[in-house]
Image 1 (cartoon, rainbow, N blue to C red):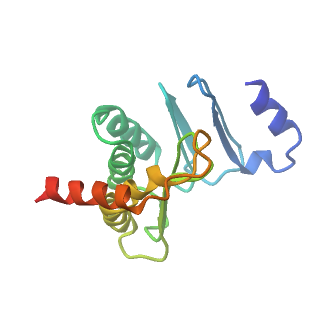
Image 2: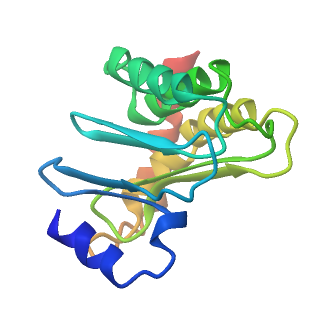
Length: 172
C-alpha cells in the first residue's frame, strides 16, 4: 500500500481518479477518488480488483465480481468477458454501450491478448468474437515470438503451421 500512497501523494488529480495495484503475490491496493462520477467504487477479492465510475450502481461491480469468481474454470480471457457481460447485464455504464477493450499481459513485453471494439453497437459481443478469432491463429503464433528466454523467437514457420493444423483438426 506504500506504492499507492506514494503515487497518490504526488497526483493533484487523485480525487478524480481510480487507481488499482496488484502485486505479484496478489495483494491489492485500491483508490477511488471522492470526485469520481457516481456511481463509483471498487471491489477487490482474491487475485482481482474491479473498479468503475459512471456506473448504474453498486450491483454492476458486485455482479462482475460474482461472475468472475464463479467462472474460474474458464480460460482467463473468457472469464474476464463473462464477468464484463455480467456487469453490463446489471446495468453497466449509465451512459450506455459504445466501446470495450481487453488487454492481458503475461510475463513477456508484448500482450498475450490485446483486443478492442470502439464505437460499436455491441462492444462486448465484438470482443467475444475477436477473442474467438484470436484462438484460430494468434495463440499458435504467439509462442514463436521472441521471449526473455529465447530472444530470437522461433523462425521455423513449419512449427507454427503444424500447431495451427493440429488446432483446426481438433475443432473439426
